[in-house]
Amino acid sequence: MNPARATVRIGLISDTHNLLRPEALEWLAGCEAIVHAGDVCAPHVLQALTSIAPVTAVRGNNDVGSWADVLPGETTLAVAGIAIHIVHDLADLSVDPRAEGIDVVVTGHSHKPCVEMHDGVLFVNPGSAGPRRFKLPISAGMLLVESGRPRAELRTLVG
Image (cartoon, helix red, strand yellow):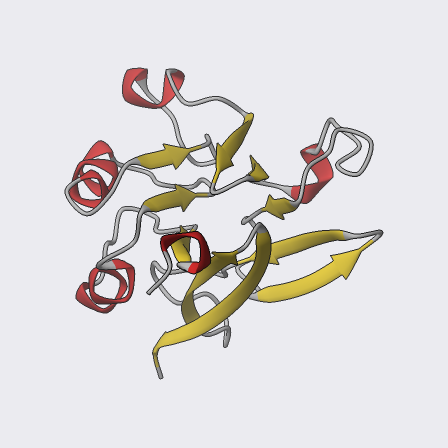
């Protein structure tokens, strides 16, 4: 296979709330990078994810304590030729993604999995991979980048 055509897999996870399910670990296995969009709630979650791939995480509204103080409120990651901006709550987005050349915005907070294109920018909320909230699915996402073009998939982890 031509390496220039290889697909780069970036795992997307959010709102684990101190619970890292085996199904999430299985889904993320083999990723080149992992993005956690906040509400981690305990450092062991990030440690476990780091055993799979490098992790970029932001602080969510439930991330408190000295371990969480080092997490940024939002950040931008450059990987596989694209720019990915991560913020826990979309309402806290402080940049204009299109004006900043951002290709993908990854959020969490609502626990509602969603993939939408707005003004040429892909917005992805992988949903919650932690404890069930209301009747929302337990889910995670995958960002697939091929030839500089991102697309996202969502996966229900637990029925």
